[in-house]
Length: 503
Image (cartoon, rainbow, N blue to C red; front, side, top):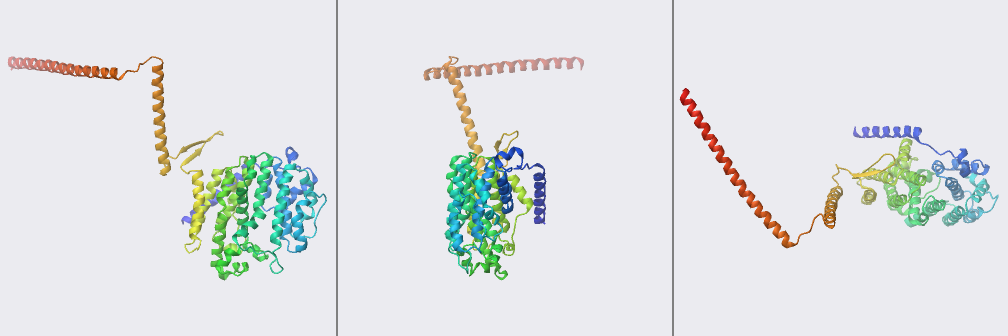
């Protein structure tokens, strides 16, 4: 009953998010006349590039278009250049004698007008067949943008060629053995993308220049997204003869090949291997959160944060879910929209990561060999979020201003300590103000400072005066008591006489 209520509440939130998104979300229109100076949508070659982006990108087209100024067009070209590399790498019909030199030299084609390639049979082959349009628009970019894109293309092509060279007719896609090999492969195909984007953000001036130097954090951003996709796409990849899960993970659970992972009879062992894949992906989450705290441009932050929250949501949705061995599992559209609307600042993104980490932790099977490690990994996310954005601090505000205060109902030890320290500081400041005020009065001559002898004499006189006052009070009390006694006696006498006379 509780689960049904929870699901109902979730569906209500997602429906509300869909409605809000449809009504209030103001998407950038790259075709708008005011935008043409930076989007170049009115130019035939750039219009083609925008169309190629829509055709080849599963989910990045919209978030790329939302980037400010010419950064959207630049990232579009960057994406298409790397898509051309991916297409060459993924095409198993291209012999290595052609593939390897092309991967290593594609960055040179960026400076070769009119170059195209027509030997691919991949679904995204259009980016190779009409590469001349991409090349022309690349040449129209600022030199600093060109330098970043060409450098990343060169490094990525060389890395892809190294892995492609290990392929054989029996194994068209080179098997990834160790975790370090897996990290290296993901670095070449995704970590370098993160580094390149950081370089473009810095070159655009929309982010500070040091962002380009955050290579470790940029790499982790790319690895989080890539490893999530590799983990989620296990069924599709195995069916198509690809396999990127590292042998170091699946072999320890008794599998001889990745094909055996989708065998229904071995589902339990496959789930243990899958949980370790999630564990491996989770180790990049805190680096990703660190990276997002460095961003200052809202559109850049959204561009980075949206895929990141989608990744953690996908890891939660697919964790311990046997469906991934039979089909492609995706998060719901309503959930996607809700995340897009919420992932607008580092604090909310940290809480999104924390909440999904809690859900993952709830799903951990007590028999899972990775039980302890998964608990630690989820705990690290919780710890990161709580350290950077303590939950006992309430954030509010209106009219563009933000305020923060301590939750009065919080039982958090840090909140209690904070309140005590705050009170001590307030008392100290009050005492300092009082002392400063007194010093000011002394400096102006309004009060004089007594010597110890004068203070002792003043105290003696005060005590004598108090003693005299005490004696006077006793004397006054006695007089009043006497008067009352006399009045009482007279009253009694008068009453006696009246009663005697009148009986």
